[in-house]
Image 1 (cartoon, rainbow, N blue to C red):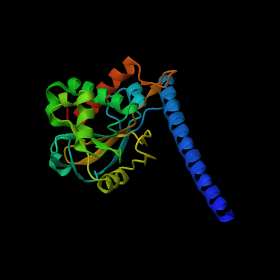
Image 2 (image 1 turned 90 degrees about the vertical axis):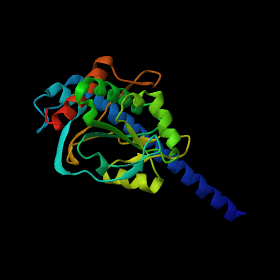
Image 3 (image 1 turned 30 degrees about the vertical axis):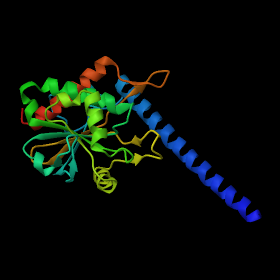
Image 4 (image 1 turned 90 degrees about the horizontal axis):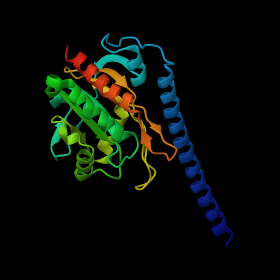
Length: 247
């Protein structure tokens, strides 16, 4: 009996510890995003080095843009929302705007989706030379149907070059690691906490720039971004893509 009670106490301790760790991670992630939003609103960051002249300092600060060493982007072969196999190598010759998304996300991912749609329209005649892509970060929703549903819901299917890529959990985890994406998914019904970064990959397949999407929350914890900032993000993504096209 004593052994059973001791075992029960150990189980409770493990559960409580896991809950505390999850709460701390969530708290830190939310605090980090809020601080970044306030920094951008206050204009508290300096202009990063290596940013194209076409991008204003204010916009570079908003997007938290940074130039990356000109190295080959990590390769992958995954499956898109239409069930087709897609490799990064097959996209050579086009600029790739790459993000990491949760197909069940109701927080920052839908906002980035809107920014992608806006950027597509801002690109005009250059749009056909730019691929907008995302890689699934939800290990519990890996089906093609999951990424297809998200794509339809957020009108990403209006972008002809859109690719929402998924695959097996081991295959996705390898890609997350290669791009320094941290993913915390404690259970099927819990919110997925993950790094939200946009990589700009040039037509030669090299990582050139990185941006960090931001989000704010209402008093009821609904995610949003002011309309002016949302439009600016779309314009900024388009400007970066056009720069990599040589425009």
